[in-house]
Image 1 (cartoon, rainbow, N blue to C red):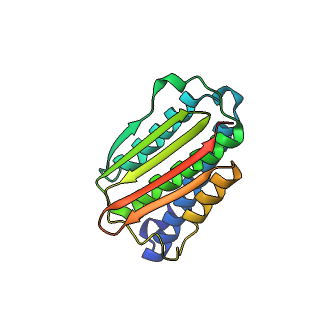
Image 2 (cartoon, rainbow, N blue to C red):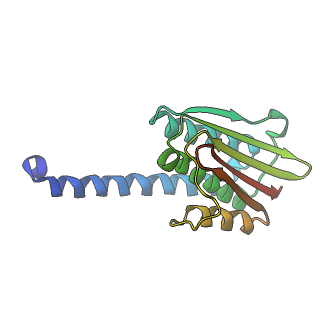
Length: 171
């Protein structure tokens, strides 16, 4: 209340604190969800991913197509698999929002032949995937996939969008 007439610097600091608080609450929610043994099915994972993507992408008017077959919905996932896969998904969606300048994101999640496949594509501006990355996002996604004995691949071309692929053994 005291900052109602305060300067722009104070307002910027308050906005920064509010954003950090929201991020902390969201992170805690993700952790609680990931360790909850009642949320161990593929269906729970799909619902959590879809909810996150819809909320995040709709803020920027980005269309979402989410493909996830129902036949594997009752399969169970380990806590580590849920956590790491969901964090890879979040990072990929956030990258599409922040950097791709896209109008559409398509997510494919499936389980087949004892493996989990996740692919996310956007129709954005793309980037040179062979170049050096200046952030931690791509490195973190690759590390998370490897932690699950999986494979991570990023395919991007300037002007043609980006596709992120993860393949992990079903755990």
